[in-house]
Length: 335
Image 1 (cartoon, rainbow, N blue to C red):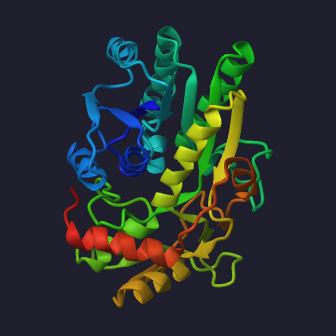
Image 2: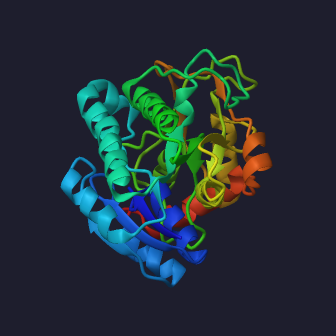
């Protein structure tokens, strides 16, 4: 296939581009580089041994998006481009709604104009909100407790309405749980700006000496060791899920939704122990007060993706820790 990847220079996007290229697909990346660097795409090409095309543009620039789609003769789009920091979304909600929701509408309008109606959409487990109890299944009601999560809910609803209105559209919504790890080459990985919002990049930055200690947000949750439990999925497994979703688009079945997770949870302390076991390094940590909005436990039921996509997570938390450390130790300052 000839595939347009929005946000393809980012963490999950870059790993997916590697898998796409290695599978023989043609890839064009559209990215404004607000949260990523073009160097990641150079390394994607180094890993895969194949070239991709890069268009530096913002999804809010309708003219640029339309021109890219008209000229590309694409078979499908994989849509990653979005702002994703929960804390920032609370502080700057209008920026998130404009970028994520309006940007997606511009993309869909441009796809319609270009006659491209096959889309894989990057959603999130945040759409399950606080009231659903794990394991999360795709038929649960969706809601969200922060502006970032609400943008994902809104974008999903827009896509559902679009498919109801026009049966020519084929969309696969992928709800990610907690992406972790890096490509085993150590050439690409998670490169957060500022203080990491996610657990494993914070751990690796402590390990590399960039930060003095890890803060554990609460050890008094109703879980076996008192810390929050999450479903950590290796980013390479996640990337493979997008290839399976692309194959599913060929079947022309309208709108489909799948969880991408491992089906089990690991606590914060379990992740720390797994990292120490995988690397032989000691991670100093300090328990601090809980963060508002953190649910005690969240993990996926990924059985539908296995049944209908033929996809299943293969890599475990120790694989993710070893790969994340390889990336961070070889690239202590990121890209």
